[in-house]
Picture 1 (cartoon, rainbow, N blue to C red):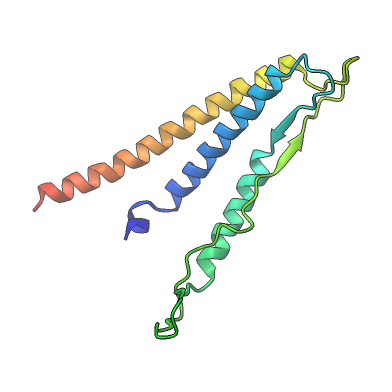
Picture 2: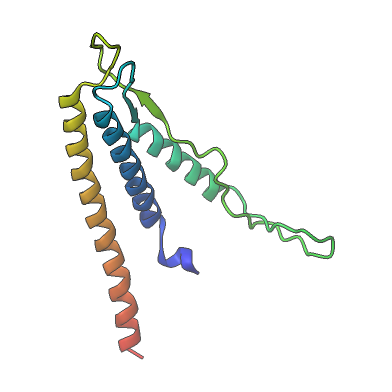
Length: 148
């Protein structure tokens, strides 16, 4: 029932927002360690991670669901299994800065600040889309209640 209200769009937006938040934390860590000797910048490959998530979601939709049983007296009903989160992985990318300072630090501060700004803008856009989607769900529920 709840899946009918919170459709795949909400799930994808939720995952994208979570990844943007994780990426923000990584970029902040890169910036904070700009002066740390031998620090290597890391990043999340957002596109590859979302592609993997969408592939797993499609596989889960296509696969028949099964009920889990933990007692031999339980009935087996073909067709119901909750999609597993196994195999859901975040794809990390090494910093693509080819310049390494004298102290072996690979953080290009201007590049990291630019990425953080772009990531913040995309995070805000995703949050607005989710807000719009949830507002539509809320309106549907309220209009349904008014017609009764």
